[in-house]
Length: 237
Ligand SMILES: Nc1ncnc2c1ncn2[C@@H]1O[C@H](COP(=O)(O)OP(=O)(O)OP(=O)(O)O)[C@@H](O)[C@H]1O
Ligand SMILES: O=c1ccn([C@@H]2O[C@H](COP(=O)(O)O)[C@@H](O)[C@H]2O)c(=O)[nH]1
Ligand SMILES: [Mg+2]
Image (cartoon, rainbow, N blue to C red; front, side, top):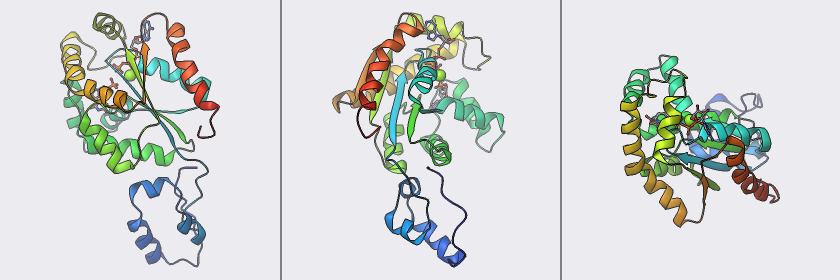
């Protein structure tokens, strides 16, 4: 259970709670603080989070494969792009800025995206997270590590030829403002310049699993399946 618990002992004063809450750093709000548990302030977190970053160019099939991973391995799917589109739809204060950034194929400031991911993680009852389409830049990566305070256990990279990605995006037909040739070209440039260094970083750390993202959806999933099947055998997952 990742949620913070609101119903607390009546013997604890609200000022004590406020002080305690302000002292908790972000990750402490996601993980178990033994001392706080003993005081009954936070609900026990049964398991350590297991975080997978799902990376790849636009249209490489990240979202499609995440659905299969959720069905097969029971992860919570947090698509950074979907969270940002939800902000636009809800007309939040950042909505207009996010819309312009997405139309331009650029990257939304890290703090905005990490805050949205953090909120979803806190609300989730799951401890296994697929973070789809994030981090897209080194700055995103560092910001996640600083704010959330953990590194991913696994990083998947859906490696797909550009020609195939363009074809898939232009055929997607979901009404996305960035599914047009002009924006796709910009997104591909951003991917090469800013996202590939993140992928290389995780490769050097030995956390990267590269999937050849061509073929049918099922064929691609057969490359993904053994990765999580192996982790399932470990107590950490
Ligand atoms: N293996 C595949 N073969 C053909 N089409 C595919 C395959 N996988 C996904 N698609 C289709 O390609 C399109 C893009 O896939 P998807 O939305 O999963 O990509 P994505 O990596 O999440 O892209 P984005 O970064 O733009 O969100 C979708 O219409 C999807 O149905
Ligand atoms: O971490 C992120 C994720 C996404 N964006 C912006 O959203 C679009 C669409 O993202 P998808 O993952 O393809 O749905 C992306 O091109 C960026 O403009 C972002 O800024 N940061
Ligand atoms: Mg997607």
